[in-house]
Length: 211
Ligand code: B1M
Image (spheres, rainbow, N blue to C red):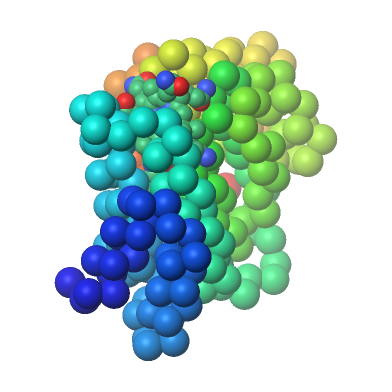
């Protein structure tokens, strides 16, 4: 792996936003692909932060700083990951569920979906089930995408599935779920339509589901 990728990884972990931005700009100029910067530097950096946080080596302020640096990096990669699709291929309402403030993975899903030509209505974080439904109806969305990073917030996804069913929208709207603690088994257990483990697969499956 190139030294630049190793350095970007290190600066994300240290929360050094400016260094991350400078190095990414330089890396792009030098011909490194946005995909490689994301997959080989940014994502592994957040994995390491997660492990260190879990083991008590790092605390919330460190995680927040790393997340900020990661987001700054993602913003620079955004135009490179999102191609110039001008015609929308369908609409997805996306958000992180109620009680949950993690949005890095959700933002990545958004980026990948936009890259596939989908219109994404981003409801942000801490989104209650009702809001997903209302927004999907208002925007004529075919997919509701729910992200959850906490085991305690996953049940909100079940509420979304139940409300889609209660409102007889199951034939119009599919519920897609994802996030680190979410699994195919969980998806089956709450009768959600689609589970995907990562952002790129989420975008591919959304496009397939929209047909
Ligand atoms: Co938090 N946090 N955090 N955190 N945090 C985790 C999730 C945790 C696993 C850390 C740990 O203990 N190892 C743990 C959860 C334990 C659990 O429930 N199982 C945890 C905890 C406990 C907490 C707090 C409760 C800590 C506290 O306050 N004591 C607190 C909760 C706040 C809240 O939400 N109410 C908290 C807070 C925070 C910060 C605010 C400091 C910060 C979030 C900043 C932000 O997002 N703006 C933060 C962070 C950064 C993390 C870790 C370190 C990194 C998460 C991340 O961004 N990963 C995380 C540890 C970890 O996951 N390794 C951790 C990178 C991101 C690209 O991956 O989001 O998984 P991810 O997205 C992936 C896939 O999951 C998938 O695509 C992406 C990749 O392609 N995906 C989808 C995501 N959404 C999808 C939706 C789809 C499809 C795929 O379809 C719709």
